Image 1 (cartoon, rainbow, N blue to C red):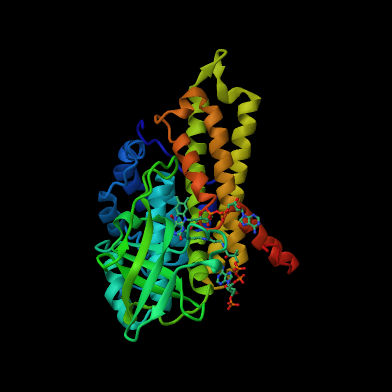
Image 2 (image 1 turned 135 degrees about the vertical axis):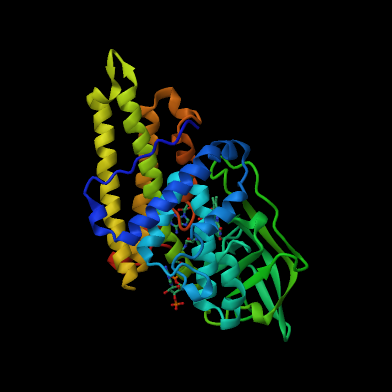
Length: 392
Ligand code: TGC
Ligand code: FAD
């Protein structure tokens, strides 16, 4: 990729709604992404490798558990700061944001929210410092959108349980030290537990051949009679609301993250439209190009306002799961449409690694599917407004 010339766009002066701390956080993450991510991300994607050195950097900039209290190693920040961090990381690459959001929202969050005091003290500081990495196992080969049908089970054996089953499409699985896993007990109740690498019968084969999120490692979790000590079970939640509660936090972060990817595409397309000359004038002077750019910044601005408001509600503990679904669905789709339009503005150059467009576009094809597909989120909104369940 050529030099990272990204500039932020704030059409409705939304910076006036942010605090000094928010702006400082944003500046420091952006600087790190420009220095440590942009120069190597294209190569990492071409090679389908997750650059492991990013882990230390992410920990140093506070991207692991930004809103987890300081006493457990987290950043003690508010939800808007968390969102801003996700936005700046995804401006760099959705796979990078994935790694940070899984660690924060899907591993640290459940341990903090549903874990015992011993579990919090044992795992959270290690996860915040990046000395330990985690993953989240909910999806199974035959149960994606409907996790309630999961087949993974635990059987009670006194001081431990025996875990059997498998999970697939698990971000960070190939290198994770621990996995927060969801499985049904003998009464069919979903329980969460912490599975550690090295436990006998636990393996994490890597998933190859992805055309999307190539700089993020994805794998399976396979459990063959794995002995899990009872102290590894999360004591304070039972049922599907456990994993779905974690998804609220991750989906909220993605709604910010998608704005980052959209901004990067828009910024690149705007610059290219002023520099690229055809028919003796910059292509930005043609009405059809301006239509694309004007619609892009309009959609980005609407998403920025929606998401900032969601952040305020989240800070006040008033954001509902349905509001989060609406924001995740809207913003990821918005970013994907912008990536496609930006690709057109770049002409043939848009398919090369010289520009970030095609990489964002391919990444967003995963983002629009994971954490609940585009259509599942539509049905969540539909159910919220009608009171009628159209899932089954
Ligand atoms: P349903 O009967 O509606 O609900 C079961 C229980 O859960 C409660 N609940 C929630 N609680 C907290 N937050 C939410 N968002 C909740 N939604 C529902 C609900 O109140 C009920 O509680 P209770 O006490 O009555 O038992 O469940 P359902 O089986 O009908 O399913 C509903 C549906 C389809 C919306 C849900 O299962 C769903 O969201 N499906 C999508 C699955 C999904 O998003 N998977 C994501 C896997 S993780 C991932 O993709 C990580 S990618 C990370 C990265 O790399 O960045
Ligand atoms: P399916 O559920 O089979 O859906 C296929 C299609 O059917 C979709 O279009 C869907 O919208 C539609 N559909 C399903 N049900 C309905 C319905 N009731 N009405 C209308 N349409 C419906 N999971 C984890 O647990 N942890 C992770 O870390 C993780 N990381 C991921 C990383 C990547 C790169 C990817 C691609 C996925 C990841 N996932 C992870 C899994 C992800 O959450 C699932 O892919 C997603 O929830 C969809 O499940 P599925 O792929 O089985 O699709």
